[in-house]
Image (cartoon, rainbow, N blue to C red; front, side, top):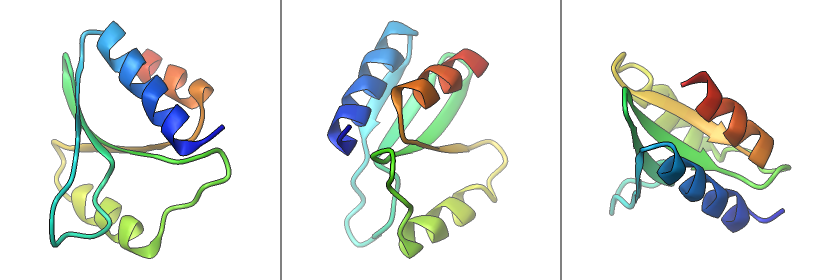
Length: 90
């Protein structure tokens, strides 16, 4: 499965569950997450990867930095099954 397929599935699931998803691009800030996801009770930065994909060092740095803010959530999702489990736990 390609990363784009994972991201497209995430978009579908978020919309089906009453959320909003925004492609996140922040010029001059390499490593930011792919998407900002607003769910009924939470805000998420989501990085999608293909099943064998790994976070790059700048992505790891972004994750570490963003998680210092306790009101913000972060997830890296690789598969449809992970997306389903993520939305179920919300």
